[in-house]
Length: 153
Image (cartoon, rainbow, N blue to C red; front, top):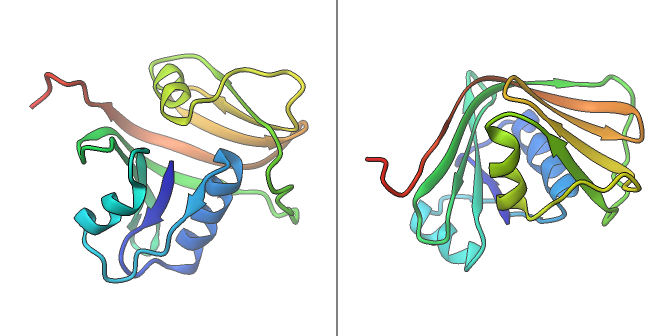
């Protein structure tokens, strides 16, 4: 997966992109003035995650398949811990959860449940928590989401 943002992201959006990239063990790509077609070319055969903004803060996540079709759209707000956090780099990340979003994100991110993983992503349809050990580092509070299937128009 490749992560990018809107064209002129705020500092908080760039920070979220980098945090997500460390948890998903993927690359964050600074989009600059590139259009979506050019960004999709950089993603090659992997999904593309675009972090959008609402009033200067991260406010949405859209995930596109390699053909450029939106497969998932999430409107959210972000909560971050005040405690400092250093990314362990390429640490194993486990994904677990329930509800409609968990299997979709598991497939897109190609992650499974692993109780020995240092980093964990806990998913429900209302919130996604990102943990290191037992400590919640940041959360995405989901306002709404939509999963697009091949027959959606």
